Image 1 (tube, rainbow, N blue to C red):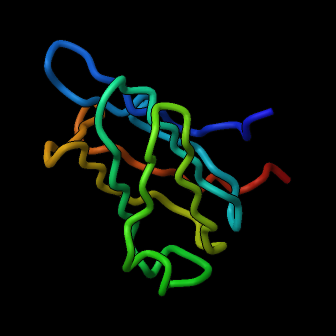
Image 2: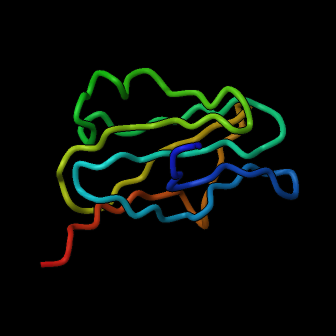
Image 3: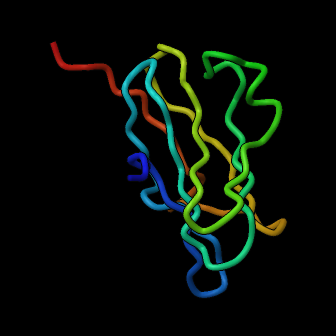
Length: 107
């Protein structure tokens, strides 16, 4: 069984899109993005300072086939930040740039 995904890459009307545009992840959790486009590897880049292991963000994670998942372990900082996805050299977008929101658990 595949791991749960927080966001998806799709191809629609000649454009690569990220859905949902806002991904909500727990502090210290994992962010997973799945490439559902029919063609093209997806290159996913997150800011190094938001990862548990900053060295892992310097190399992009690829979704090599339509069902592969790029997975990142996030640090425990709260707040939101943007990330970038490209497919075949074309930048994928959400409603604007896609954003990850680190949502602290309710007390």
